[in-house]
Length: 130
Image (cartoon, rainbow, N blue to C red; front, side, top):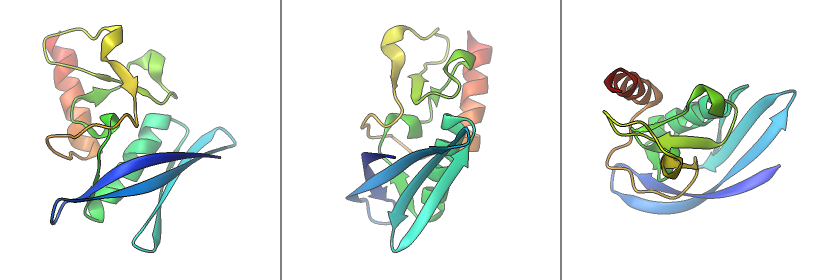
């Protein structure tokens, strides 16, 4: 099990707090857990980015945004990245370069905190733009 230090933003009042995500693997499944407000939230899937998205969506439901690259609207994975903890930060009309590839938990300050569906839609729009 690995521990990942992250920063959360409480969306109701824009107060930041530090937290720890526990990362584990069991039978080919990525399990990401975080304790927040006395409750444990979990995201799990055989795909790392999907597990991350499930955890992020649970945090959003509780009123918290993750301040990291993977939580940004323009974060997405190519097929070759599937299963990894890396994402591209893409821009419409442009193909990504190696410098656009970042660790999913790299600290960032997103302009907004989209859910997984909004992120998926943006990625589709980006694909259609290149």
